[in-house]
Figure 1 (cartoon, protein in one colour):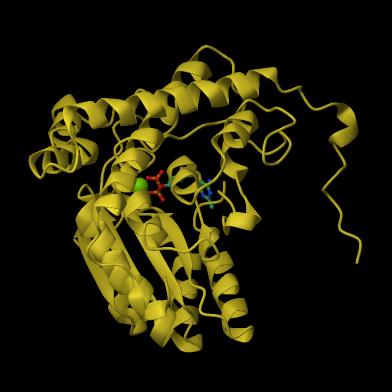
Figure 2 (cartoon, rainbow, N blue to C red):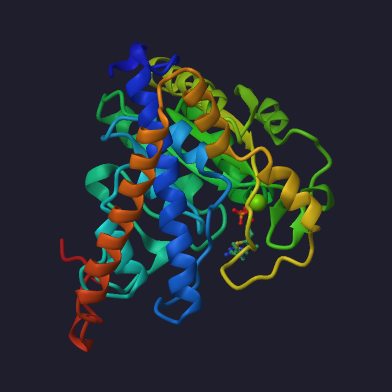
Length: 328
Ligand SMILES: Cc1ncc(C[n+]2csc(CCOP(=O)(O)OP(=O)(O)O)c2C)c(N)n1
Ligand SMILES: [Mg+2]
Protein backbone atom coordinates (compact mmCIF):
# COMPACT_ATOMS: atom_id res chain seq x y z
CA UNK A 1 0.00 0.00 0.00
CA UNK A 2 1.24 3.50 -0.74
CA UNK A 3 0.57 6.49 1.43
CA UNK A 4 -2.75 7.54 -0.03
CA UNK A 5 -4.12 4.05 -0.49
CA UNK A 6 -4.60 3.18 3.17
CA UNK A 7 -7.35 0.65 2.97
CA UNK A 8 -10.60 1.81 4.56
CA UNK A 9 -13.14 -0.71 3.31
CA UNK A 10 -11.60 -4.12 3.80
CA UNK A 11 -12.08 -6.62 0.97
CA UNK A 12 -13.02 -10.26 1.57
CA UNK A 13 -9.43 -11.33 1.83
CA UNK A 14 -8.69 -8.69 4.46
CA UNK A 15 -11.83 -9.62 6.40
CA UNK A 16 -10.77 -13.26 6.49
CA UNK A 17 -7.29 -12.19 7.57
CA UNK A 18 -8.78 -10.17 10.43
CA UNK A 19 -10.89 -13.11 11.54
CA UNK A 20 -8.03 -15.60 11.38
CA UNK A 21 -5.66 -13.25 13.22
CA UNK A 22 -8.08 -12.59 16.07
CA UNK A 23 -8.69 -16.32 16.43
CA UNK A 24 -4.94 -16.99 16.34
CA UNK A 25 -4.19 -14.42 19.05
CA UNK A 26 -6.87 -15.82 21.31
CA UNK A 27 -5.84 -19.43 20.76
CA UNK A 28 -2.20 -18.54 21.44
CA UNK A 29 -3.05 -16.78 24.68
CA UNK A 30 -5.49 -19.39 25.98
CA UNK A 31 -2.64 -21.89 25.60
CA UNK A 32 -0.10 -19.54 27.16
CA UNK A 33 -2.33 -19.18 30.22
CA UNK A 34 -2.65 -22.94 30.61
CA UNK A 35 1.08 -23.52 30.26
CA UNK A 36 1.89 -20.67 32.64
CA UNK A 37 -0.44 -21.98 35.31
CA UNK A 38 1.14 -25.43 35.03
CA UNK A 39 4.55 -23.88 35.66
CA UNK A 40 6.07 -24.28 32.19
CA UNK A 41 6.62 -20.60 31.39
CA UNK A 42 8.87 -18.08 33.07
CA UNK A 43 8.42 -14.43 34.04
CA UNK A 44 5.21 -12.44 34.31
CA UNK A 45 2.56 -12.67 31.61
CA UNK A 46 -0.33 -10.34 30.78
CA UNK A 47 -2.89 -11.58 28.28
CA UNK A 48 -4.89 -9.56 25.77
CA UNK A 49 -7.95 -11.84 25.48
CA UNK A 50 -10.98 -9.67 24.63
CA UNK A 51 -8.90 -6.85 23.07
CA UNK A 52 -7.87 -8.60 19.83
CA UNK A 53 -9.87 -6.26 17.58
CA UNK A 54 -7.58 -3.36 18.43
CA UNK A 55 -4.28 -4.97 17.42
CA UNK A 56 -5.78 -6.54 14.31
CA UNK A 57 -7.77 -3.50 13.18
CA UNK A 58 -4.71 -1.25 13.53
CA UNK A 59 -2.01 -3.59 12.19
CA UNK A 60 -4.31 -4.38 9.26
CA UNK A 61 -3.51 -0.83 8.10
CA UNK A 62 0.27 -1.10 8.45
CA UNK A 63 3.06 -2.15 6.13
CA UNK A 64 5.81 -4.51 7.15
CA UNK A 65 8.27 -1.59 7.31
CA UNK A 66 6.04 0.51 9.58
CA UNK A 67 7.02 0.62 13.24
CA UNK A 68 5.12 -0.54 16.29
CA UNK A 69 5.93 -0.08 19.96
CA UNK A 70 4.02 -2.28 22.32
CA UNK A 71 3.25 -2.69 26.01
CA UNK A 72 3.43 -5.29 28.76
CA UNK A 73 0.29 -6.80 27.11
CA UNK A 74 1.94 -7.26 23.73
CA UNK A 75 1.25 -10.74 22.32
CA UNK A 76 -1.63 -9.50 20.17
CA UNK A 77 0.39 -6.62 18.71
CA UNK A 78 3.25 -8.98 17.87
CA UNK A 79 1.07 -11.59 16.18
CA UNK A 80 -0.88 -8.99 14.18
CA UNK A 81 2.45 -7.41 13.06
CA UNK A 82 3.48 -10.78 11.67
CA UNK A 83 5.96 -12.12 14.22
CA UNK A 84 6.89 -15.78 14.10
CA UNK A 85 4.72 -17.77 16.50
CA UNK A 86 7.42 -20.36 17.18
CA UNK A 87 10.00 -17.79 18.22
CA UNK A 88 7.43 -15.95 20.33
CA UNK A 89 6.48 -19.13 22.17
CA UNK A 90 10.13 -20.11 22.64
CA UNK A 91 10.75 -16.70 24.20
CA UNK A 92 7.89 -17.19 26.64
CA UNK A 93 9.31 -20.60 27.51
CA UNK A 94 12.69 -18.95 28.19
CA UNK A 95 14.39 -21.00 25.46
CA UNK A 96 17.36 -20.21 23.27
CA UNK A 97 15.35 -20.03 20.01
CA UNK A 98 13.19 -17.21 21.36
CA UNK A 99 13.41 -13.71 19.88
CA UNK A 100 15.67 -12.58 22.73
CA UNK A 101 17.25 -16.02 23.10
CA UNK A 102 15.03 -16.68 26.06
CA UNK A 103 16.41 -13.81 28.09
CA UNK A 104 13.55 -11.34 27.68
CA UNK A 105 10.23 -13.14 28.02
CA UNK A 106 6.76 -11.81 27.32
CA UNK A 107 7.56 -8.15 27.99
CA UNK A 108 10.53 -8.01 25.61
CA UNK A 109 9.13 -9.65 22.49
CA UNK A 110 10.48 -7.83 19.47
CA UNK A 111 11.43 -8.30 15.83
CA UNK A 112 13.20 -5.37 14.21
CA UNK A 113 12.84 -6.88 10.71
CA UNK A 114 9.09 -6.65 11.05
CA UNK A 115 9.13 -3.19 12.62
CA UNK A 116 8.20 -4.50 16.06
CA UNK A 117 10.39 -2.38 18.30
CA UNK A 118 9.39 -4.25 21.39
CA UNK A 119 6.92 -5.05 24.10
CA UNK A 120 7.79 -3.01 27.17
CA UNK A 121 7.64 -3.60 30.90
CA UNK A 122 7.68 0.13 31.67
CA UNK A 123 4.23 1.66 31.38
CA UNK A 124 4.19 4.50 28.77
CA UNK A 125 7.82 3.91 27.71
CA UNK A 126 6.87 2.85 24.18
CA UNK A 127 5.54 6.31 23.30
CA UNK A 128 8.85 8.20 23.16
CA UNK A 129 10.35 5.24 21.27
CA UNK A 130 7.62 5.55 18.62
CA UNK A 131 8.35 9.28 18.39
CA UNK A 132 12.01 8.46 17.80
CA UNK A 133 11.17 5.93 15.08
CA UNK A 134 8.85 8.44 13.41
CA UNK A 135 11.51 11.16 13.62
CA UNK A 136 13.97 8.81 11.93
CA UNK A 137 11.44 8.23 9.12
CA UNK A 138 11.16 12.00 8.65
CA UNK A 139 14.93 12.46 8.63
CA UNK A 140 15.36 9.62 6.12
CA UNK A 141 12.50 11.03 3.98
CA UNK A 142 10.57 7.76 3.97
CA UNK A 143 6.80 7.53 4.34
CA UNK A 144 6.92 4.99 7.17
CA UNK A 145 4.67 5.55 10.15
CA UNK A 146 4.96 4.49 13.78
CA UNK A 147 2.19 3.19 16.01
CA UNK A 148 2.49 3.32 19.79
CA UNK A 149 0.05 1.08 21.63
CA UNK A 150 -0.68 2.18 25.20
CA UNK A 151 -3.20 1.62 27.96
CA UNK A 152 -5.56 3.97 29.77
CA UNK A 153 -3.20 3.88 32.76
CA UNK A 154 -0.29 4.94 30.54
CA UNK A 155 -2.27 7.97 29.41
CA UNK A 156 -1.78 9.44 32.89
CA UNK A 157 2.01 9.18 32.73
CA UNK A 158 4.27 12.11 31.93
CA UNK A 159 5.78 10.39 28.91
CA UNK A 160 2.33 10.28 27.27
CA UNK A 161 1.90 14.05 27.45
CA UNK A 162 5.47 14.76 26.42
CA UNK A 163 5.21 12.40 23.46
CA UNK A 164 1.93 13.83 22.16
CA UNK A 165 3.31 17.34 22.38
CA UNK A 166 6.60 16.39 20.74
CA UNK A 167 4.82 14.54 17.94
CA UNK A 168 2.55 17.54 17.34
CA UNK A 169 5.30 20.18 17.23
CA UNK A 170 7.79 18.09 15.22
CA UNK A 171 5.08 16.78 12.84
CA UNK A 172 5.89 13.16 13.53
CA UNK A 173 3.96 10.39 11.75
CA UNK A 174 2.77 8.60 14.90
CA UNK A 175 -0.56 7.04 15.70
CA UNK A 176 -1.04 6.71 19.45
CA UNK A 177 -3.45 3.82 19.94
CA UNK A 178 -4.93 4.06 23.41
CA UNK A 179 -6.42 0.73 24.46
CA UNK A 180 -8.90 1.88 27.08
CA UNK A 181 -9.86 -1.36 28.83
CA UNK A 182 -11.18 0.54 31.84
CA UNK A 183 -8.49 -0.56 34.28
CA UNK A 184 -4.87 0.04 35.14
CA UNK A 185 -4.17 -3.08 37.18
CA UNK A 186 -6.99 -2.88 39.79
CA UNK A 187 -7.69 0.85 39.41
CA UNK A 188 -10.74 1.84 37.38
CA UNK A 189 -10.24 4.73 35.02
CA UNK A 190 -12.98 6.73 36.75
CA UNK A 191 -10.69 7.00 39.78
CA UNK A 192 -7.81 8.15 37.62
CA UNK A 193 -9.26 10.57 35.04
CA UNK A 194 -12.02 13.17 34.87
CA UNK A 195 -12.71 12.90 31.14
CA UNK A 196 -15.09 10.31 29.72
CA UNK A 197 -13.22 10.01 26.46
CA UNK A 198 -9.46 9.97 26.89
CA UNK A 199 -9.13 10.98 23.23
CA UNK A 200 -10.31 14.46 24.32
CA UNK A 201 -6.79 14.96 25.68
CA UNK A 202 -5.53 15.27 22.09
CA UNK A 203 -7.08 18.76 21.92
CA UNK A 204 -4.52 19.95 24.47
CA UNK A 205 -1.80 19.23 21.94
CA UNK A 206 -3.57 20.43 18.79
CA UNK A 207 -3.86 17.00 17.18
CA UNK A 208 -6.92 14.93 16.18
CA UNK A 209 -8.42 12.71 18.88
CA UNK A 210 -10.84 9.94 17.92
CA UNK A 211 -12.78 7.46 20.08
CA UNK A 212 -14.07 4.19 18.63
CA UNK A 213 -15.67 0.98 19.83
CA UNK A 214 -12.63 -1.24 20.31
CA UNK A 215 -14.74 -4.40 20.32
CA UNK A 216 -15.64 -3.76 16.67
CA UNK A 217 -12.68 -4.61 14.48
CA UNK A 218 -14.20 -2.89 11.45
CA UNK A 219 -14.64 0.37 13.33
CA UNK A 220 -11.05 0.17 14.57
CA UNK A 221 -9.78 -0.66 11.10
CA UNK A 222 -11.57 2.28 9.52
CA UNK A 223 -10.45 4.82 12.12
CA UNK A 224 -6.90 3.45 12.03
CA UNK A 225 -6.91 3.75 8.24
CA UNK A 226 -7.70 7.45 8.50
CA UNK A 227 -5.11 8.02 11.21
CA UNK A 228 -2.39 6.12 9.34
CA UNK A 229 -3.16 7.99 6.11
CA UNK A 230 -2.97 11.30 8.00
CA UNK A 231 0.40 10.30 9.44
CA UNK A 232 1.81 9.06 6.12
CA UNK A 233 0.76 11.88 3.90
CA UNK A 234 0.54 14.86 6.25
CA UNK A 235 2.89 13.84 9.08
CA UNK A 236 0.02 14.57 11.48
CA UNK A 237 -0.17 12.45 14.63
CA UNK A 238 -3.48 11.14 15.99
CA UNK A 239 -4.65 9.90 19.37
CA UNK A 240 -6.95 6.97 18.62
CA UNK A 241 -8.82 5.68 21.67
CA UNK A 242 -10.33 2.20 21.36
CA UNK A 243 -12.77 1.29 24.14
CA UNK A 244 -12.16 -2.33 24.94
CA UNK A 245 -12.02 -4.85 27.79
CA UNK A 246 -9.78 -7.63 29.05
CA UNK A 247 -11.64 -10.78 29.99
CA UNK A 248 -9.03 -12.05 32.43
CA UNK A 249 -7.08 -10.51 35.28
CA UNK A 250 -4.33 -7.92 34.94
CA UNK A 251 -1.67 -10.67 34.90
CA UNK A 252 -2.05 -14.42 34.56
CA UNK A 253 -2.92 -15.55 38.07
CA UNK A 254 -4.78 -12.37 39.08
CA UNK A 255 -8.30 -13.35 40.13
CA UNK A 256 -9.57 -9.85 39.27
CA UNK A 257 -11.73 -9.47 42.35
CA UNK A 258 -12.05 -5.73 41.80
CA UNK A 259 -14.73 -6.24 39.16
CA UNK A 260 -18.03 -8.09 39.00
CA UNK A 261 -18.87 -11.23 37.05
CA UNK A 262 -21.75 -9.29 35.49
CA UNK A 263 -19.40 -6.66 34.14
CA UNK A 264 -17.13 -9.26 32.54
CA UNK A 265 -20.12 -11.12 31.12
CA UNK A 266 -21.58 -7.95 29.58
CA UNK A 267 -18.37 -7.44 27.59
CA UNK A 268 -18.14 -11.10 26.63
CA UNK A 269 -21.57 -10.63 25.04
CA UNK A 270 -19.97 -8.07 22.71
CA UNK A 271 -17.00 -10.29 21.91
CA UNK A 272 -15.02 -9.01 18.94
CA UNK A 273 -14.48 -12.43 17.39
CA UNK A 274 -18.14 -13.47 17.66
CA UNK A 275 -19.27 -10.12 16.22
CA UNK A 276 -17.11 -10.46 13.12
CA UNK A 277 -17.88 -14.16 12.79
CA UNK A 278 -21.64 -13.53 12.76
CA UNK A 279 -21.26 -10.85 10.19
CA UNK A 280 -19.04 -12.87 7.89
CA UNK A 281 -21.31 -15.91 8.15
CA UNK A 282 -24.32 -13.75 7.27
CA UNK A 283 -22.54 -12.22 4.30
CA UNK A 284 -21.32 -15.59 3.07
CA UNK A 285 -17.66 -14.60 3.47
CA UNK A 286 -17.27 -17.44 5.99
CA UNK A 287 -19.10 -20.76 5.91
CA UNK A 288 -19.46 -23.22 8.78
CA UNK A 289 -16.68 -25.21 7.09
CA UNK A 290 -14.18 -22.35 6.66
CA UNK A 291 -14.96 -21.10 10.16
CA UNK A 292 -13.95 -24.49 11.53
CA UNK A 293 -10.89 -24.58 9.29
CA UNK A 294 -9.61 -21.25 10.58
CA UNK A 295 -10.03 -22.41 14.17
CA UNK A 296 -8.29 -25.71 13.47
CA UNK A 297 -5.43 -23.94 11.69
CA UNK A 298 -4.97 -21.67 14.69
CA UNK A 299 -4.90 -24.62 17.09
CA UNK A 300 -2.36 -26.43 14.89
CA UNK A 301 -0.13 -23.35 14.59
CA UNK A 302 -0.12 -22.92 18.37
CA UNK A 303 0.56 -26.64 18.96
CA UNK A 304 3.44 -26.44 16.50
CA UNK A 305 4.83 -23.39 18.32
CA UNK A 306 4.59 -25.17 21.67
CA UNK A 307 6.41 -28.25 20.31
CA UNK A 308 9.11 -26.00 18.89
CA UNK A 309 9.48 -24.17 22.21
CA UNK A 310 9.57 -27.37 24.23
CA UNK A 311 12.29 -28.85 22.00
CA UNK A 312 14.46 -25.75 22.11
CA UNK A 313 17.30 -25.79 24.70
CA UNK A 314 17.48 -23.61 27.78
CA UNK A 315 20.17 -20.94 27.22
CA UNK A 316 23.44 -21.64 29.02
CA UNK A 317 25.12 -19.16 31.36
CA UNK A 318 27.52 -18.14 28.54
CA UNK A 319 24.74 -16.10 26.83
CA UNK A 320 24.26 -14.00 29.95
CA UNK A 321 26.59 -11.24 28.82
CA UNK A 322 25.88 -11.55 25.09
CA UNK A 323 23.78 -8.80 23.45
CA UNK A 324 24.43 -6.50 26.40
CA UNK A 325 27.16 -4.25 25.00
CA UNK A 326 27.45 -2.82 21.48
CA UNK A 327 30.88 -2.04 20.05
CA UNK A 328 30.94 0.91 17.64
C1 LIG B 1 6.35 3.19 34.98
C2 LIG B 1 5.59 2.04 35.55
N1 LIG B 1 4.74 2.23 36.58
C3 LIG B 1 4.03 1.19 37.08
C4 LIG B 1 4.20 -0.09 36.57
C5 LIG B 1 3.38 -1.26 37.12
N2 LIG B 1 2.29 -1.58 36.18
C6 LIG B 1 2.43 -2.54 35.27
S1 LIG B 1 1.09 -2.64 34.26
C7 LIG B 1 0.30 -1.40 35.09
C8 LIG B 1 -1.06 -0.94 34.69
C9 LIG B 1 -1.09 -0.41 33.30
O1 LIG B 1 -2.41 -0.09 32.94
P1 LIG B 1 -2.78 0.31 31.48
O2 LIG B 1 -1.80 1.30 30.96
O3 LIG B 1 -4.21 0.71 31.48
O4 LIG B 1 -2.57 -1.04 30.65
P2 LIG B 1 -3.38 -2.42 30.76
O5 LIG B 1 -2.67 -3.26 31.78
O6 LIG B 1 -4.77 -2.13 31.14
O7 LIG B 1 -3.27 -3.02 29.40
C10 LIG B 1 1.09 -0.91 36.11
C11 LIG B 1 0.70 0.18 37.02
C12 LIG B 1 5.11 -0.25 35.50
N3 LIG B 1 5.30 -1.44 34.95
N4 LIG B 1 5.76 0.80 34.98
MG1 LIG C 1 -5.91 -0.41 31.04
